[in-house]
Image (cartoon, rainbow, N blue to C red):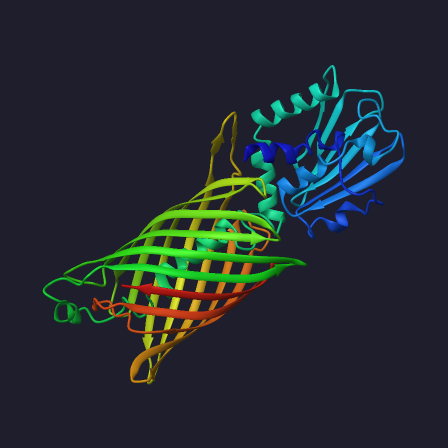
Length: 423
């Protein structure tokens, strides 16, 4: 995976072995958020420019390698011509330049304050010096940090990215999945438990989302897995082990996320429950040249207000999310992102009877905001409706939930479907 990161960061020897159709190059600034990877290649000796546009790092590299520079620009010489490349590396502008008849490589990333020159005996040797520079200066980490703050395609903070997905999962564990599951009179615990045992619960689920980032289609598929240990004396006290897994596809660029977390639900009163939690999560995307780990610590609250004919549930969560150092082969980098996520929601719970079965309709509104190192989309809003069966804190019986949702943010809009089964 790090090879793709390096290859994209330098636009590799690709602009010496460039491919794609010859074209009049558009201003790269105008297309930086349309596709993750865009490269304008200019040969000043023959006076021509060509562009390559791709959704994935690997696709971009493959396109760059399809034909040699002389095939793209007739009469060109990759060792002596004046060659410049202007790349949008997932919304980060990177400039590279070889002067005519010179092996010196200029490497500039304006937004990061990087302006370096590499002098090898040949142009290939200059490229090797650039790779050594990237290995030892955390440039890759700084690139991912910039993308997280400025790119809607970032696998860390973009639509369906690691941090938004983890924040949503943490909030679900402390509120959405248990709004009526924990808050109940403690006096019912002993009476409702069976043979002194409340019974534990295994959760399996399936969440699907579909939307757009500009003209790029996005799809997300999550499998939330968890196991809940319920205290025999007071089943409202619950230790939850979490193992969420998420797959995303952004215009053909695929990412995989996974995590492991612990949360503990503590009843503060008959109506109020607090849920502290910790989690380690991971995202890997060869297509988007990103790999990162994430540590998080959260505190969530669920408060129930009984009304006539329905209940109102109020959920709040505050969490700290920090990326860690990642090593792969000769490369070590850290995106160095620390952000505070705050997610607040309100839910109306309405009892209904369907074919003789007592069920609950849940209408929700959720607002999410970030502080500190803000992502590209620093806030989002979501509405949802869910139909569920019994989820009493004291019952050992299974329960199920299924629903629809719609989320809006600066990155784009997403339709969601969710299903969960506890048994």
